[in-house]
Length: 155
Length: 155
DNA sequence: TTTAAAATATAGCAATGGCTATATTATTTA
DNA sequence: TAAATAATATAGCCATTGCTATATTTTAAA
Ligand SMILES: [Mn+2]
Ligand SMILES: [Mn+2]
Ligand SMILES: [Mn+2]
Ligand SMILES: [Mn+2]
Image (cartoon, rainbow over all chains, first blue to last red):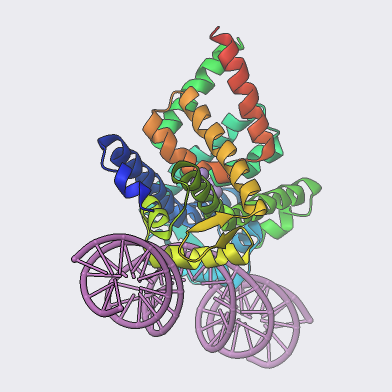
């Protein structure tokens, strides 16, 4: 029976458990932000490529139905990430622009890193789409260092 | 207006869009499996450490409420990942054991990799908890190659 | 063997993220 | 301008993942 409770009295075990909880909690938090990040990043991409971000384009790029996008855009508007101009698509607020910039850079870094590691480009693209949302600032730093030294070692 | 539709007539653009959709689709699929993977991996860990995996322990490790675990275990049982023996915790089926083994190895590999990259151990632990679910077989291979050559270069 | 404690299950709620079918609203085009 | 087309919004459904409060069931103690 309660083996855990008995052994958890030492400082080490308690610490281990706390760290584990912290990991799962942080991951659950990241998971709640994934879609928001994908949306603002995609909206920024569409605007920079085509000058506008319409629901139909977002839906096609994401591979979801248009009402799904409609609902999410309402949430993004409520979160003050975007503004919806009637018949003119959506635009990023300052807050949305900042988040999009951060996400684009992080996404690009992760994908570049995977390719540098030898992952085929198409696979790197897919994996980066999921991985990006779980990469901390410390890991970003480590990746940047690796890419710099990796580039240097090839000179 | 419909800038995308006009430019999407070239083979390159269509291809780009398809790849993008594929990436998001694969990521959505991975996201649906994340929790199942975390559960079977944790159950395997608890059984190997304490000989049993009880709801209360799972709940504490994950940092969620017990009814949340109760519901998820029903789903895992319906998916034939576990069997629930009354008053004896849960046990992994062959299917669950196979998945757990795969997840443990992949999780461990990702965490080891992050540490090798220079990420502080505690941060690596947190990041790996989320990243692991989005790492393809090809990326696993690339990581293994890196760890081997990295280890060799330090000899 | 009752009683107390621990573990598990259920009920009922909410947020998120999907879907299809069907309006409604804008924009083009005839 | 009126009709057709395109874009967006709504309604209503479902599954998932969380929660609290409250049974119920098992196990352990008295
Ligand atoms: Mn991204
Ligand atoms: Mn993404
Ligand atoms: Mn794991
Ligand atoms: Mn995980």
